[in-house]
Amino acid sequence: MQTPSRKADFPGLMTPDGKPWHYLDTAATAQKPQAVIDAMVNALGRDYATVHRGVYARSADMTAAYEKARSRVQSFIGAKSANEIVFVRGATEGINLVASSWGMANLKAGDRIMLSMLEHHSNIVPWQMVAEKTGASIDVCPLTPDGLIDLDALETMLTPQHKIVALAHVSNVLGSVLGAKRAARLAHGVGAKLLLDGCQAAPRMRLAMQELDCDFYVFSGHKLYGPTGVGVLWAREEILAAMPPYQGGGAMIDRVTFEKTTYAPPPQRFEAGTPMITEVIALHAAIDYVDALDLEACFAHESALAAKAREALSQFNSIRLFGPEKSAGIVSFEMAGVHPHDLGTILDEDNVAIRAGHHCAQPLMAHLGVPATARASFGVYSDESDIAALMRGIERTKRIFG
Ligand code: PMP
Image 1: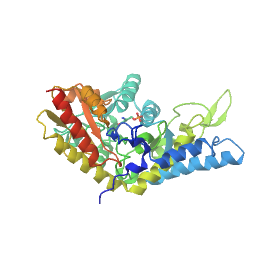
Image 2: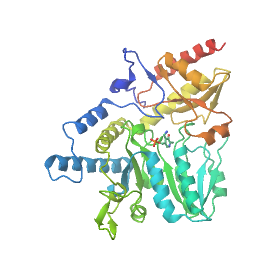
Image 3: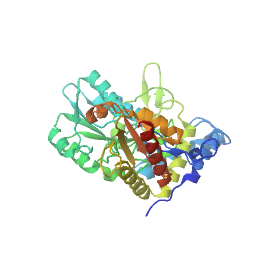
Image 4: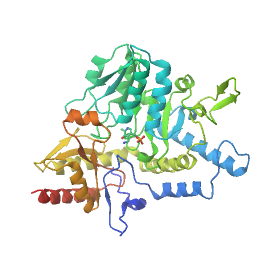
């Protein structure tokens, strides 16, 4: 079954003069459905109050809505308990939280951290920072020729010294989907924990934490059709319970004296300060929106569009495609003799928005032997008119560059 295009739900998909805007940069950030915009406006307006502190009714209502959003995330990702859901600013903060809290408490000199060649900088740099502090070292799992994380190689590389394996569930550059269950078996086989960076998977795949059997999962709200400034860290309750706080401040404490402070249990221990109240409420609306569409149908819809785009792009001799044939709705390519930024600028004149650059994955760019790629990424609102506009723009670019 194919999900029909949802363009009408997304006011952002129009230019100011009312023309269609062919938005092919959903992997960077997704456009917002009206339901999310409405939820945000109401949370900032008629319903606005702080959470967890006020004794007045509006604050109690807001607290209930905030905690209801936590339970909604729990059901969305199949977590055992709402206490396993920590609201963070985004995936970047989620990984930094795990690297500094869990990492500083569990890594020491001689330990190893396993990453892969296709990771986003946010799943590289926090581990380098904790490796520098602890004396742990980093290994990099290679890719298969078509751009999947090579799990056969992972199997041979993992040792009992590996304490954490941190991998992208879906690559933001290549759209490759990780064999996550096998990765979990391999990591656990040597006693390591598995962190999955679910930034690109959460908007595209039905998630079930118990089945995935990972230990940490992170994603960002803004890629899931929700607002910026909110994301989710999921971890098993017993792992969170053993982790020291990441930041200190209000809301994360049990009791404070100048002599000693004791901390609240998770998830509050990891949510210091006044949280991103309106963003969390709007994330709830975003989850309701995508869940109602059926994420399995969304995945089929977006990967079918990616396959069509790959096929259309492969008609050009000058175009080199990266990544696997079967992509989760993300297609990276280069056009010989045209810098991706020039291509992006020409396409923009035709109201086609693609991403051009290193996609915060410079090690992957070096591995592919390019400074940058052009990337078209699809969302629930994408349809064939977007591919047709992309192809018209590419024809025009070809003519411009002779
Ligand atoms: N990981 C992946 C795979 C991503 O695509 C992104 C965003 N491009 C991130 C991590 C970081 O997400 P954020 O910037 O929302 O924290």
